[in-house]
Length: 246
Image 1 (cartoon, rainbow, N blue to C red):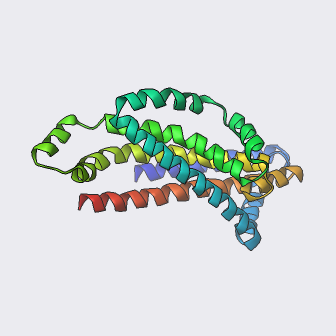
Image 2 (image 1 turned 120 degrees about the horizontal axis):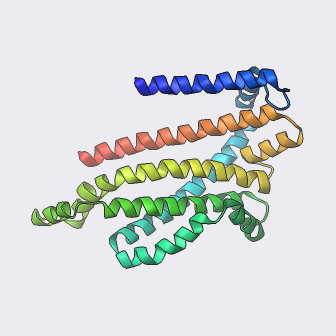
């Protein structure tokens, strides 16, 4: 209950600051809240604009799926086999510190001006995050639990199901939350610079038309997508964890 109060207070603070700034500055600088709310409602009531949201979601899900798959697989091998971790970690460390805009420029050269560039930079942003989290999760497993599993005759599958997965799940969940946030930012950035479709394309069009309320409205929708994906992930993990426990 206390956490909810803090969230409400934070939202009220942001809205209060927004309202105050909208009264001090021109609508072209800080659009008023009602104008942005009306634009959000307009977007959500348009079937055509839902198609643009769908395009971004497809790119986001594809990039996340590929990035999570590669990151988790590499993290699994890196966590179990120390030489593999020592080999992969420096490479992914370099990938992690390369600015997303650099990957985007390379993606434009390799893939052209289309949605594939957005998917690529999402993958490059997500892989190092998931690798580190999975590696850390496996490294944190109590070796005594594995020894106890061997004493009780646990098969590899049982060790995986009852020891490894429950131990790694919190690390995976934390990594996923960070990865989704990073993916939401990079996919829109990629769309802004490489295509006229998707949420990023709509933001670029709004910028060219000098419509700040539309830019903020699409940003609000993207934030909503982030929280929806995170919530879906939590529900999925809860279901999987409960199923594993049973």
